[in-house]
Length: 324
Image (cartoon, rainbow, N blue to C red):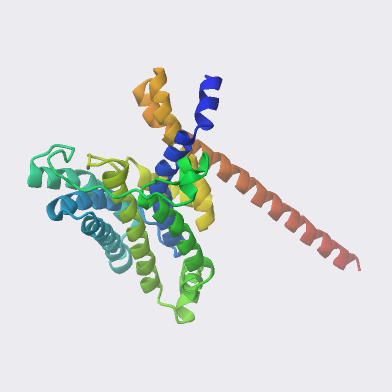
């Protein structure tokens, strides 16, 4: 077993699959990060991905144009995010409960819409939908091992990598990032500073919807070539856990998402050694959640130790001052 795993993790094909598996979870984790920084949790990411996946397949099949399908899928995802914003920010409903409700509607609604339009039950087998292209990177493709891993990936994998840079710039370099953080830290203080918290939260929800749209379309038009019932497979929920581990940073999202990608890719290989299919399907989620728990525990322990030392130092200074 050890030799098998060692052989897998050193192969270029394994790391190619890792990057492919990481891309969708990375995109939705970035979406969860930016909304969390504004003080609102986008629990509707799962539903956004489902509607994007279905809409992209239907529109690309109807127009025979993959890019129109992609734009339509992103539009559907943004619409879900805006509906969440309407409930949570305008009607003052609980954002978590509203998000979960939207996810439940999407789970059954996508299957209903697919059946109503095509007669297909659970999989869009009758739709001749288009597939997002893969890109071959000049020069890089000729580098031994690295070329096999990096080059030839689906375009959304590269979009996910670019998204990390864009979200990092938004949060750390641009003025809008300071407004987002101010809104998330203290709404009243942000409002006193002339910031419109509702507008900022809607902005982050739109960005989150765009990222989830790319992820959803990738699942049905890149990762696979059709829509299937529940194709998001809990990635939206995992992303909301991952953003906590990411620590509110775009770079941290890479490591949180990579943990899922590593185990998801390994599960693909473990199918060949006779393990129970149910165990293999659960493995990426179980290992990812366990990893999140360990990382969060270690980080909280370090933070508690830092506060303890700070308190001890403050108490010592006070004693010295009293003695003087």
